Amino acid sequence: MTGALRTTATDVLEAHANLLPIPLLLQSICHRSIIRLAAHPATHPLYQYVRRAAKRLVASHRSSLHKLTHRLGIIPDDIEALNPSRRPPTFRHPCKSHIAPNKEAAIEEHALLNDATQIYCDASVNYQIPSQTLALFTE
Image (cartoon, rainbow, N blue to C red):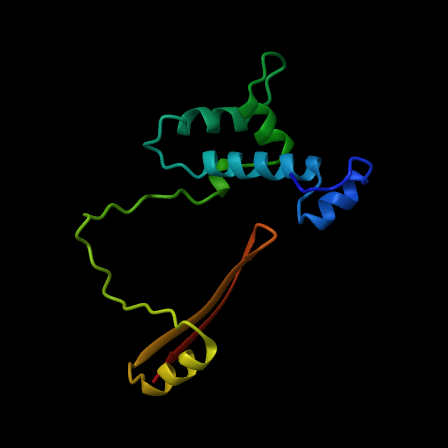
């Protein structure tokens, strides 16, 4: 996959390939999964099961929900529920967005803008961690 020799140390290979070590990667995936389950709205079929599993840790026959909520300390009531916003396919957002092809074009376009409110953002994804910078300008 990475084209490395089989004698290369795994931790060095993971560092050069920008991969998390396997234990951290698995923990990250489990944490992300249980957070998504805990953030479902009350109308979701798994809503009651996740809350019931988080309330108490049973002595026997523990499910994955029991193990994940208690091992990672997830309390579903502390997590904001996500309510999807449904829109028809013909929906047009009232805000205009535009991405300039390069820095020089962005500077030129900025000089021509006369909108009362302008929002600039620089979004990037590095090491699977999204980072974003946002600037809001109003008159």
